[in-house]
Image (cartoon, rainbow, N blue to C red; front, side):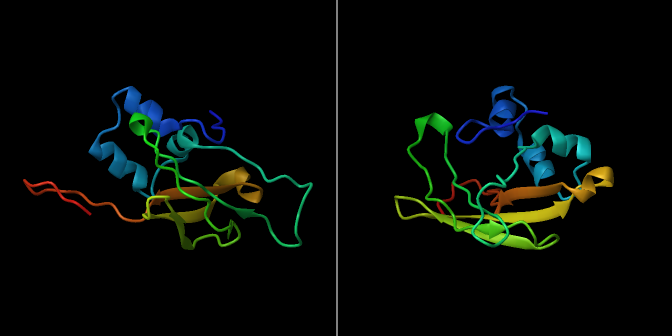
Length: 140
């Protein structure tokens, strides 16, 4: 199981460099029915620090960075969201410096089996997926 540290390319970048990232593969990754062995290969493991708390449950913030072709696009940090709402899909928004708004869906589930007591699976997926089947390019 690989650990991905903040600011480093993740598993999707590795799959793309190996030529294994095609549209059917991406569609499969969005599916809720991924087996645990596939999820574990895509996992980014982390744990909240227990040292500092502001009186409530810990909250997670995220920032998106486009590492493609030395792109300058980096979002601002999202507002914090909790990991207590198992089974609920949350929408997390971030703003870019160029005025764009980015949204991802975050769904939280409990890990299966013995891991269920102390492990949650947080799935971050695009909020919208647009597939252009026209002969002309789209601009959104």
